[in-house]
Length: 248
Image 1 (cartoon, rainbow, N blue to C red):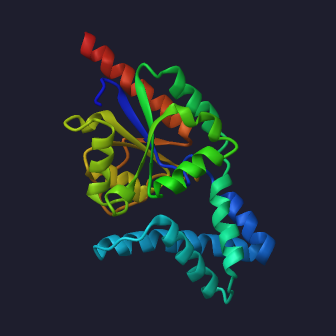
Image 2 (cartoon, rainbow, N blue to C red; image 1 turned 120 degrees about the vertical axis):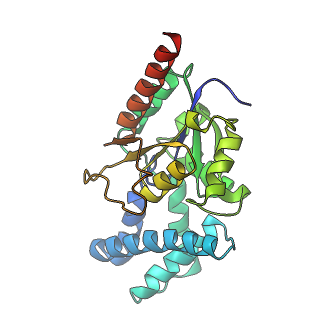
């Protein structure tokens, strides 16, 4: 149901939840140096698979894609993994920790719940996302803050396809008022997709390298922040300024 509040939709993996602990699990099997290389390649193929399959007009769940891209990354390093060990690595997604600033960011959202509604917006399946949120030792206590977990599984395609952001807008009850929807994401492709679809977007630049994506120079972040807490502060400032202008 639509409300007069602004919507903040948080990407999950790599934005709220850090996947660093997955690299630690890989290090137990292959050592730290190889683990870092495998983890980077795993993430690369995970995203590449989503883009390829969406371009093909096909669909596999994010769990299937994550498992397949792990096998691909391991094969390129000359490794094979038993089904049991693969399951163990996949289960690491259920117990991820948040980035350090996330509790403070979510506290800000809760304190300003009269102005904003928070959602999770992810490529993951509802089951995968729900388990990750509830089982995370840091994010689980904040699960009730989110109005809903919105995933791409309902539309059977992946970010940054336009249908995915249209689905977010519809589920958040903001059809006809896209400009009231903010995406917060650490992924440039996600930010460009959201802006192309008419949403606002805050990009989390944890590396501090600035915006270098040149696919579409028209669809750049509305906000660039060093962390999610800074992004939430900026969005709240934007919302309060807009309300003040409306009253004046």
